[in-house]
Amino acid sequence: MRPRAFITGITGQDGSYLAELLLLKGYEVHGLIRRASTFNTTRIDHLYVDPHEDEVRLFLHYGDLSDGARLVTLLSQIQPHEVYNLAAQSHVRVSFDEPIHTGNTTGIGSARLLEAVRTIGLGTRFYQASSSEMFGATPPPQSESTPFYPRSPYGAAKVYSYWMTRNYREAYGMYAVNGILFNHESPRRGATFVTRKITRAVAAIKAGRQDELYLGNLDAVRDWGYAAEYAEGMWRMLQADTADDYVLATGQAFSVRDFLKFAFEHVGLDWRNHVHFDERYLRPTEVDALIGDATKAKEVLDWSASVTSPELAAIMVDADIAALASPDGKWVDKVTLDTWAPSPQWQIKS
Ligand code: NDP
Ligand code: GDR
Image 1 (tube, rainbow, N blue to C red):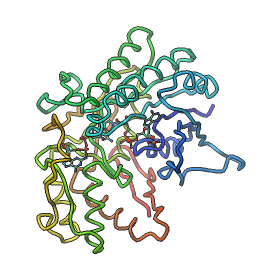
Image 2: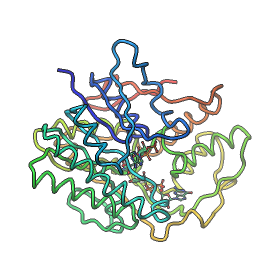
Image 3: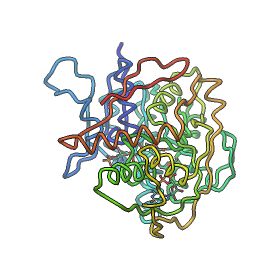
């Protein structure tokens, strides 16, 4: 029987790569989308097939993590084998402006979905998009056994979802796992996260359309990986014999300043001629350094990251230059899984 997956957050960066990957693996994919007055499906438009055609395997359903009844109805109809909970208010800085909304979506939204999975009672496997932000102020390296010390409403909401996922596993015997993912980026990354903000600016500056870029804290250290590779790690977590929690990370640490250097130098520019400080991009409490130890994922899932920040910056700058040159502005990178194991090789196709 064809495996069926349900993805919340399918219109986001990770949801789009995961949908692509699961379709490549032969799944029937169902995604939750929010009704909006403008189209919000740009990242998955290239996967969409008119429902009147034959061989349709991607289905989109309106809904929202704030509406628990809708989640029960949908899961009852779809009867998925796997549920991936990727939906969230995912911006750390914005979570200080909207702490209640963030708690309701990023925190309690997960509880609503867990409860819906439990209610339909079909043994569905559940993946929770947990985050390195849960470690917050705890110094690196961070692994599955590192204590949490969240530094934002977003981080606190993710800690709640992490423990709810573990509790459903322990209380009800559900196959429910936390993927504790460190920062992962791509040409599909939201434009207000720092890497994409930088690479879009580099493309615009190179094209002569922009001259300045305003940023906050350049000293923050992150472990930036490539989102397409992380989607495979999520899937592998749900294929393991027993449910467990895993860190996915590259183990490589770079500062925002390093990433600036990689991105600007890729097109022969000096970032110091273009970047200015703006305090509006500072956070009330910052997370200074996140560097992951993904040994367990390597040992149990045979997953490891191959792309680190210097290469990632080049991939993203090249993609933003291509996007700027595209006539309709609808350019989306397309990824194909050519050879994954044992060493992951992904190809970007324009
Ligand atoms: P994005 O911000 O790109 O995508 C978030 C998705 O959630 C979008 O599809 C968005 O829909 C959807 N969404 C937001 N609120 C709701 C809601 N109330 N109901 C239903 N859907 C909603 O995030 P990423 O793809 O980068 O991340 C995926 C998940 O992984 C998130 O949970 C994030 O917190 C987590 N994570 C991300 C990491 C990263 O580095 N990218 C690292 C660790 C964890 P819409 O398109 O309509 O806005
Ligand atoms: P982060 O990602 O907070 O780690 O959360 P983000 O790219 O927003 O910030 C990374 C670091 O860069 C510093 N910074 C800036 N950040 C933004 N957005 N804009 C700026 O202008 C800027 N200048 C400096 C930040 O202070 C921070 O230290 C991401 C999200 O995807 C979360 O959902 C996910 O859980 C974590 O990664 C792991």
